[in-house]
Length: 163
Image (cartoon, rainbow, N blue to C red; front, side, top):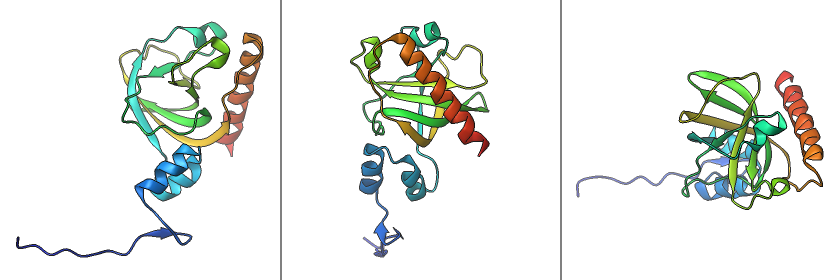
């Protein structure tokens, strides 16, 4: 058909070939730090902010709930240190990806608590880069215990952003 094909050798990192399959496996394992090295940037997720049940706000930690497309390759459920960008401004964030077992949830959700942000995000598009996995998602015995853990997660993110 009048064109040439050149076979390129695989690009490797520490002798491991970089491929989309390898990146998907890293995300499935929650290793966003190594995935970022393979990608050359932080794993990034973008979605429209939709209404949730208001549970985060009720706990004192309002969250932006991202509409998740079925085509998204989400990382292992858990809590992550991230960076959210909306309206051209960036904010450090605590990100929870999971089913919210303490609050009786069953469906997978992608919730973002932007630090140092106040305002209405409903209907806007939020881009979130994940930088580090902080912990597994878990069911707490009480909402108060969950609230104390969220405070500790925010402290962890604050410490990470200063390092």
